[in-house]
Length: 123
Image 1 (cartoon, rainbow, N blue to C red):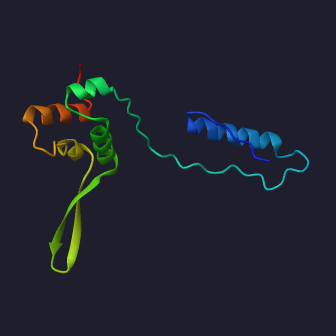
Image 2 (image 1 turned 120 degrees about the horizontal axis):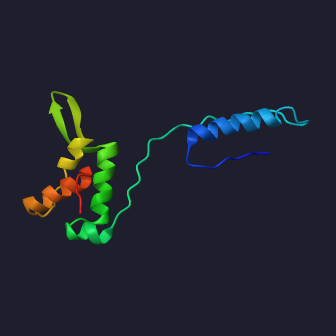
Image 3 (image 1 turned 60 degrees about the vertical axis):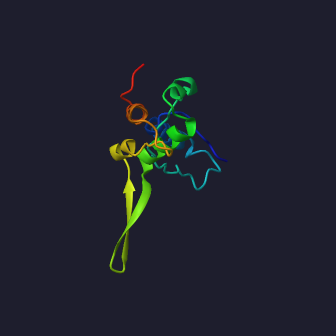
């Protein structure tokens, strides 16, 4: 038998899981009782307003890529030194600076994109 608990607060779910385990541990037939450890994974949720993004020349794909780069980083090149190869990557705040229109785009579009991606843009 498996007992699963669901909810948004993982710390509270873990407490409840131990509470449930304590309540059923002495039930006849219960063997190998365990509370599986959960790995807390940082998450970010973005709710896109396509119309608003479009007003600033941004697409859902570009915003998704920028957010992914912001959080996970992105390889942008390599540096060769002798026999060694070093990867060059951007992430965090630098990722916002990396938003560029592949066809060049205007500096005002890039400025709006950086503000939008950094969360400082307000309507």
